[in-house]
Length: 64
Image (cartoon, rainbow, N blue to C red; front, top):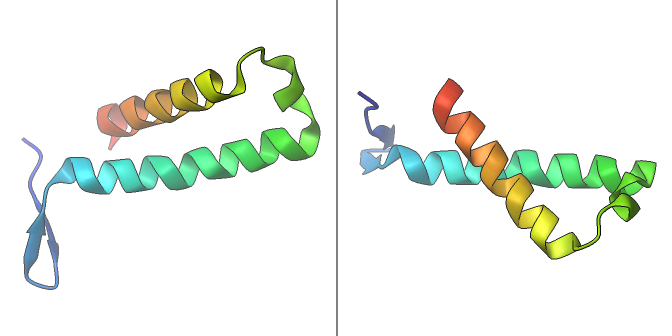
């Protein structure tokens, strides 16, 4: 069972922490893709970014 995170006496649901971590990891991956030019391979950029975010979020939930 996933316990709550204690942030200076305030208990935070694990999903909130995972979403923030997924946002940080997604922005790092996006910046790498922009710098290498691989982002131009995708047809619908907004759809790709949302799918990337949810994939990272699911992987964080599964493995952390």
